[in-house]
Image 1 (cartoon, rainbow, N blue to C red):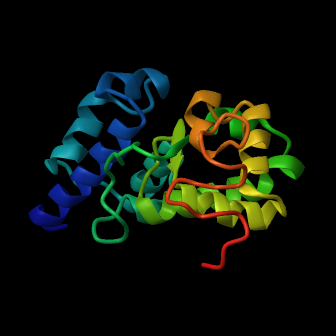
Image 2 (image 1 turned 135 degrees about the vertical axis):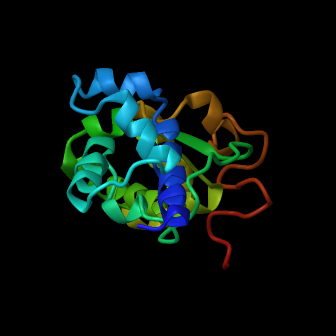
Image 3 (image 1 turned 180 degrees about the vertical axis):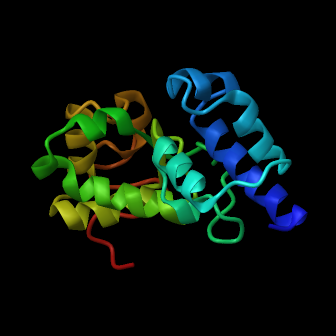
Length: 184
């Protein structure tokens, strides 16, 4: 493995670890000593070569597909701005029955893959995503927001601009002036 590639791989490893809110010591604790802080740190600095097997095991530990750890295979793993976006609690979402939350889990998985966002705790979605999810769940986006709030995966205060009952605009309208039945 070239030094340049090892360093780029290390940047990806560090970004995924950071997104999950883990320090090097935290990785060692969470893995119950399976992953030593000094070893993971040397992978992240590019000082130590990582085998395919170990990389696969590390991806499994982080809960991400292996290809997301490889340089040049996805979006850079970085934090996204939260302004004007809805924040889903992924831990609560994963605790819901699959027959209920399955479509949303698949949609979130697709977004995670596109963004390279594997923090595993929260996911921000845009207002436009509500339209798509509304089609999937066969309901208006405002009904979807209520459902997600009822499921306790969406903070009611954060949903206010998207929610009929609490918004300042007309029922069924969204930030940007779109109505539920507007052609896009």
